[in-house]
Length: 175
Image (cartoon, rainbow, N blue to C red; front, side, top):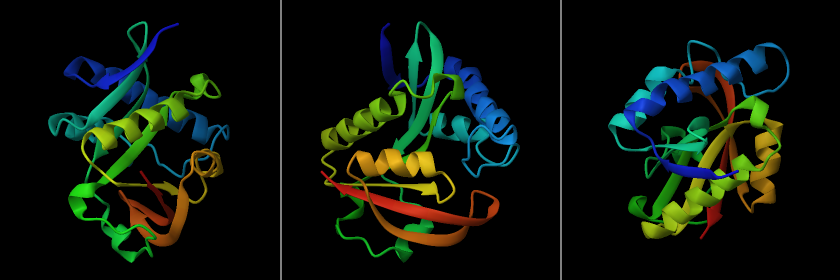
């Protein structure tokens, strides 16, 4: 099976939105914990805005969208509250946002594959530091990032993308 990751196109939006909905379904059924809320975050407009900025990437197999993420150099405002171990100029920090893999594709290594893509993307843009975040409740993501060498720099209470009461885990890695 050939799985690829590439920059998204307009035709990918329905597939990305379907992955978001599948995650919300699985969360509401108690099969996973992301801390996200249906109708609040992530929603189709999340993907549309990232696509317009040229920052949305998709993981696909046989023309089916199985995952997506937003890659850029934009650090979330609360990142300023972290005690980062690795200092870098804004343009040297690559940021991964909203990494999603369809719940039915879980356990196949697609999340790790996307993180590897992100790291290569950052290297190609001369980034020296990687940063990302996840909800403290998302233990699965925290374990994956730790296994991939990411250090938890802080846990910051915040309202995240319209979701109140989030403890946001801020992670980093030196390239």
